[in-house]
Image (cartoon, rainbow, N blue to C red):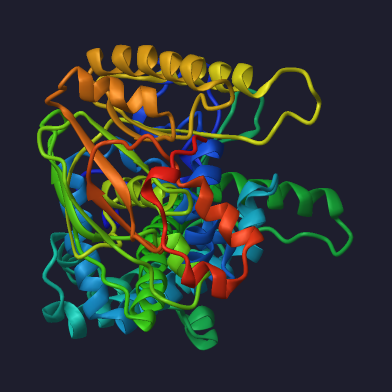
Length: 533
């Protein structure tokens, strides 16, 4: 039995996903079971904790599943993404049913948790009865699951859920479940056990074989007057402890195969419910997030994934989901068409929404590739085999190295993991030194990355760096600029525009040192705003 709600041909097991491994893309480990080596940087730079906490609520298991599903999503192909999107659309239309299925899987796992230790015990009797208890509990839950499948199947259209419901209806009919229950009752051996044996070389019992008891239990009268079977009987003395131990050992040896078979069956059933819970947990997390965004009136859409390397990145209404979750109002969205572009350079005034835009790009990419909806009105983006962030960090408190050294060291680590068509997000990188040196470092690094077919989004105040690509008349570079109105107001929208030789530092000066009436009364002098970073 397999749930197959997240992949068409395999299970999603969050416990198999590795957090640490020697080399990214190691041939000794299935890449599909690897989490990014730079996961902590992604979580920090993109504020993923806010997203994950919203998806999980107070459920730590939902948090773990959401985290691993999102971080491992870059390994998904377009077929898997669309497979999950269709399943998620079904979930959005049938939230109560999906949460009921999730509740049943949790109920089954919690009910069997207290008996699970018995299956790993050293006594076959405890293994036998522990497995019987788990399987008998599972029959009731499976019957309820089958009932949901029969009642609700017509409301689901995705391949994932129709396949699951078809399996439940086909494999767990009432007749089949009733026959399983009868076999489990017989396996408790309340009428005793019937064993056949041969004598070993030294007269000991050997090759004990469990036999089926007569179907009908004889009454006391039938046992007295009925036909006697040929054979011998013996009775143990009341205090014959050694004889009782010998008979107990014979019983355990005779029923050992039954105990092992039932333990394997119990393990198989519980594994199914664990997979079902894990895969439904992902969709329940998506429902929690969707409800939160819908309550705020924020738009969401199911993006269109494009094969890697096609350089198609177009969207409208794209916003930072995590920022929206942390604030009361709505977040300003942006519209960009970067088709055919390998790099997007974002410049403009301080506090104009540049870093927020960069996080919205990273979040949308991760959410798309794990099969979720994204925070946008429309989004079409190419798949990337890996996503990296290079955001500025605070000064090293240990004073072991300066900010520039630390930035270069992180850049070196990223380069070691890059592969063609990866996406790299730069936020104010290499600005820890002077304008000329920082621009030259950035230019050389970015030029090398573009040659290796890396998709780049770069937020910067380094005018020389940005303008160097204008001078080169690069056809594969898109320039965006944070909008600033003449009165200094930030709209938090990005418009196409080449870099300007000012960061509007006077806006900050006026905000800090001038009174509000003076700010409103004074008209900005564009010629006087040529203040650098």
